Image 1 (cartoon, rainbow, N blue to C red):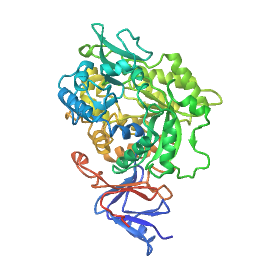
Image 2: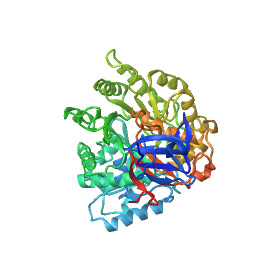
Image 3: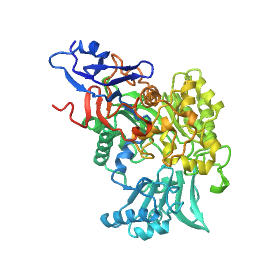
Amino acid sequence: MDADLILHGGRVFRGLENGCAEALAVKDGRVLAVGTEAEVEAHAGPATRRVDLGGRLATPALNEAHMHLLSYGLGLSQVNLRAEQVRTLDEVLTRVAAAAETTPKGEWILGRGYDHGALDIGRHPTAAELDRAAPDHPVFLTRTCGHVGVANSAAMRLAGIGHNTPDPEGGAIERKDGQLTGLFQERAMRLLRDIMPPPSEAAMVAAIDAAGRNLAALGFASASDMNVGMTAGLAEIAAYRRAESEGVLHQRMWQVLAGNPEGIAKDAWEQGLRPGIAAGATADALLAWGAVKVFGDGSAGGLTAAFFEPYLEAVGGGTGIFCFPDETMQRLLAEYHAQGWQLDIHAIGDAAIEQVLVAMEQAERDDAPLAGRRHRVEHCGFVTPAQRRRMLRHGILPVPQPVFLYEFGDLYLRNLGPARSEHSYPMRTWLREGHHPAASSDSPVCTVDPFINLFTMVTRQTNQGTVMGAEEALTPAEALHCYTWCGAFTQFAEAERGTLEPGMQADIAVFSRDLLACAPEEILGTEADLTLRGGTVIFDRHGALAA
């Protein structure tokens, strides 16, 4: 059988178990052969195309197991406030004012990505400051974590929010001296988001396309949208289906429905959506509706992750915010578990993780056991040894974001102290214990750049150079394993992708250097040169497979 494509001239990372090979052959979208150059060359024919790796590394394509693809795509047209570009309040306000100059009066200005801990003022912007920058527009800026945001006075007036508006369940509206500061935490942000005009279907399809192209250029052939329905309701399902039908869905998507009471999981179920790939779809279908998400708490950087022990007094103490009382969490998870959905539940602090684990355990029934369901605790940042043991016993998986340490690690130290912070996101412990942690970014919370995530897993360094829990560092091969096979495992796809063995889908990334051999700091300068999804080119930096 003649191969369609042969990769040779560099190392091919087959996976953590089988290591590296010299070459690989692809036929009809699947791996045909992998081994020595001579073994693979035996499958060459007159029409076989070749890519000379030239010492570069080929690996299974990366899997973004936890991100918000639509939000990331829509955010590309919002005010960019990420900390690597914005370090001062003046720059925040300058960017908002610039957006106001090009936005018709009365229309919303949305921004994303500021980190109050990284700003020169060491606090959130205020409504009054945003009023001065954009007096004729409603403004809402979302902190990088996505769990806290700041509104200006025009936005709060549109939402009917006054100084006596009560805090909603699972949320908080900040007041100082009886006056609104503009800061909204957790479910209180819905008061504003619910009155924002939703994007059109065409705008969502364009955002899905743009986001997917960016991901392909970074080596991703699989991704996820972890809260489908929270921006535009059920219309997001239609937008994804349209993107697939129009050929602008670039990754294999594991879709997670918004399961909070204000989400779409109930309505989607009533309209006939069920777990799994749609009826009539081929094995290579790009859309799988696999899970439901419920929020347990917030973020450690935003002081809303729920802990047993309080935050440090220097940042105000407190133990964070539970999004729901125990009984609500237990009711929601029992319902979704019984329906057959995977549970992908957000919990960062140890108290929130406990609430979620109890709810998962209580959802188990004789006709619906936990075993084999691969329920997930999303983030799972500050997990206790006892909780890890229970997760392992039930097959509950952690889906962490090591890049949180890079972007927020120094803030964790400030908020929580070293004892808790340095042992957060314990990647090596998880691997050693058999948990299969699926590395991911939570983009647009953090950068989607996988090389920063890989660097963090290998070094445990923050962007300030602080090393946090060096004993939890991984080898480069282990880090790639977490970014490939572990992600596939959490999506019940490990028999199809995540390794490069004969018969597996030819989802392949070629990187600009050998990540298994380079110095850790060189990881940060690496690029993806070629990305294949099922043997189809979805990114080709240098035109290696140009017609």
